[in-house]
Length: 530
Image 1 (spheres, one colour):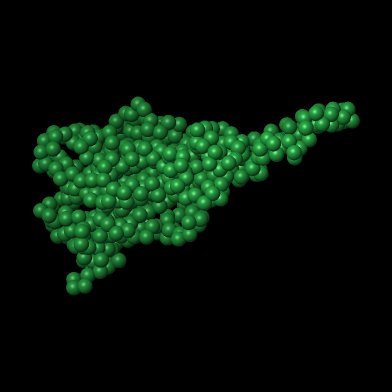
Image 2 (image 1 turned 90 degrees about the vertical axis):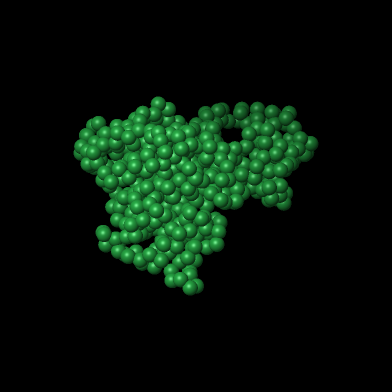
């Protein structure tokens, strides 16, 4: 029985809820949950406090073995022989068995070998082995923003957080709950490929390498920004009893495509890049690193693109904007809680295209976005179109050893008068006409993809059918049973939640519900089998 099992067993025997137990110890309920799931170990002070509450010894709590609760000293005296009797009997045994020391040494050696070899090779004993080597390590969470978004190292984040939006700084809250969280910044309008390369460089503390083959194809520089310090120390290495340092990737909106592609490249690499550069190929494109990622979570992610790009192309303009990328960026700025996102300096992270930080007003920013998006297909708007997403999905494969989760949202319902889907009351104002247009749109893309009524339910930017899972990949609905097994390499799709595209990151949402959503999902991920 592990430390985690004992805490759970004793708490239930005492009739205490996690909240009541946490209150007695002066900790959060999340801390108790982590102790009982085995993802964290209580410190000495808390072990002593538990010993008092449960009326057991600290030895009983700490030893990872099946043992009865130790009796008190007075009871021991009555139950066992006194020390003198033990000494006499031991002496007699030694005299009768001169080879006892040798046998004992052999048995001790066998026990040591077993305690080392078994935990390493058989998963059932890994937790005990980890406890002996510093405890189970916590996998950090990496939050990746969507189109037009930013990370916590961007100046704009000082006045408005992308993660948390109107509910406050989500990263700080999650950190206070005991999680290790990073929120890096990648190109706000760049392609999924370029963003994945930038994310890898930040995680490893290296220079961005977009790949020789990719860079030549799209006419930009191969190398980008250099990062001196890795976001995740020892990423991919083995520490604390052979535990590999993995990460949990969480992508909102277009961030979903970014984290999917990064995970796929880590495992499968890129044959085109290896052919182009040989021994000088970036480690990202070499493959064989899929086990560096524990889980991938997509929030309102356009796995199969968005019909909004088709609407813009067909109608010419929505909300007075005629350029696809321009409109999408404006909407994504808005759902992140910024009404005037381009005041002052904005970094598009397009240095490899010869475009650096931009000073000026909104018209200057708009011209940059428009000129960039018309230069080819190496940008977000193309990847967000159904045809572009279909091309992107050809290069992305799920990794067998990674857990996959997807959370779709919807801000529409079946219309009673109008055909198709209509926005719910309370839909974010700027997204209302967009949700209405997407709710009635039907058509066929240039690449032959049929956009029918199954695409009409949407969150104001992404179609629900697209947010569930990448077309053609294996998926299951979230299991209803709490103790149901979650398998690797399969998409688990959550029930569609009510809300618009920004609800999940906190825009106009309830603070407690937003924070609870992330902590509950993190608890789920942390409790998964390793």
